[in-house]
Length: 373
Image 1 (cartoon, one colour):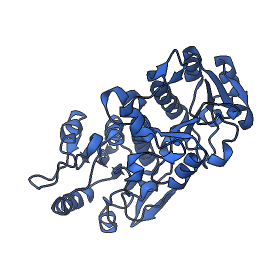
Image 2 (tube, helix red, strand yellow):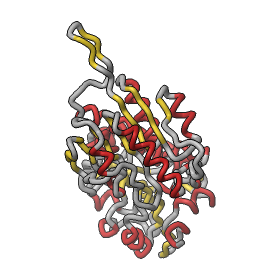
Image 3 (cartoon, one colour):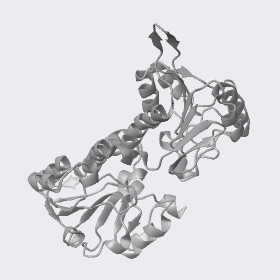
């Protein structure tokens, strides 16, 4: 069983899908590991560290030659995978809805593509969940990005010359990223409030010491989709939520939006009129900017100023903390493959619950119900 760790080809992607830690663990399972030269360089991992861990390091052709499992952060270009074993697994974040043509190409090439972002949110799969591990650090980084753009201090400062008020930070969307954003903003000394469409998050918000901002007594607040994800709201709820947020957002210094619905464009949370109501110098960080954005006017890959408010739209936020996010992503992949490792076959054998959820292609066809439906 040969596992290949590929160098990422996507522009701006600094993460790597394997670390010396996971290389050692895969070798302990009985696999051999090949790493493409320079794969870990942008995540502060030298080729020598992989060699010391027991991997071979070489060019892409040597890395792919006969490989049974190809590990990536983002889906590799199908045209670049020549030499891999017939029916090789591609295990990565594959963006199935946004890169459907690439998924079709994996099928045509005979690969078995496994989309790690389709991992079901069940207890036994928590350690395999790349969305959670990467979102956690994205929420943290969003607050640091806001602090870097905000030209005032976060905590209250008491000096002989007078007192500086604490920044007011509002987090919209309280999934993994939102919860970490709340915790980080609190640690930096901000006054934090938060909202979400899922009623169950109110207790989580308050447990972190933030103020929960919720629409009360309006149908549609439940907002709980399958697997713990948010879903679309009723029109009545949307109207009530917009009114509540408008009155609250005008008083905020920092707003961080994190709302995503899998397979759909990001929901619009902040309008141009709401941006205009904020104080000049305020900062909005849109973590959903690559899926269409929660904020009207946000631009992917740019920091823009609108009505005196800075709107931060960095792409690929996890990649901006590449060393730590790579370590977590790599453990997610190891935890997944090792959980299904069959010692007699010296290979992983997936069960139906997780296998059917994440498998996109098999036997030359696209087989995932979420793509076929």
